Amino acid sequence: MTKLGNTELLQYGIYEEEVDLRIHIAYKVKKIYIYEREEAIKILQHHPTRSSYQEVNGAKTETARGHIVPVEIGLFGIQGLIDINIRKSILEKNWCEQTDDESIKGERAVNIVREMLEKGVIQLYLPEQFKVRAKHEGDLDMQLKGKDIILIPEQPSIQVKCDYMAGSRALGGTGNLYIQTHECNPHGKH
Picture 1 (tube, rainbow, N blue to C red):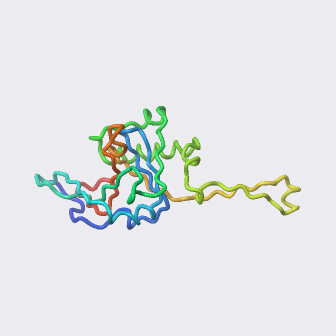
Picture 2 (cartoon, rainbow, N blue to C red):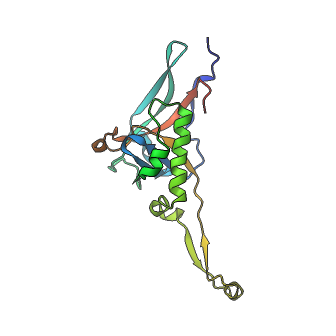
Picture 3 (tube, rainbow, N blue to C red):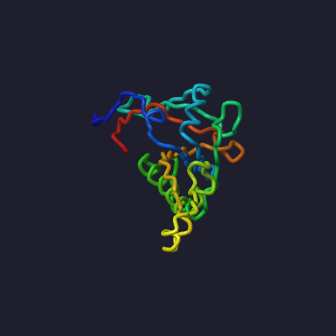
């Protein structure tokens, strides 16, 4: 028998996160979906829950639970949900298969977001309160030092999720995002 990690389903997910934004990497449709955590929490009760299962020592075990939320903005959609195509070069470098280990998928999803941030792709689409602001420097001493404008970057915290099959049905996705609220980690993977 294999030594197991946590096999009890615990509340762990969007409600416990201390982040501003969540980004789902939807490999199937080659997009990322960005939304404010608080906007998603507002509408979760209106969406059905789904569980994920894994084989643990020969038994089907519930390892995650979350809400299925449509990517289309409707009455109970996530307000401000943004989708952005993943650049081909970034996607190819960080491709993974749905059957790959969770840690590999997670690492590659984070790499995609990091590269898109470094290339300035994501910043164009961020909600206004998370964009870099330019402040005219009115202090004469600062101006004499050549500093006319000071950039004030907002630094939102981001949770990245590999949501492999998420995305528009028209593009081959499920039509939804999976927003996790509970999990267990029987295989001790991170």
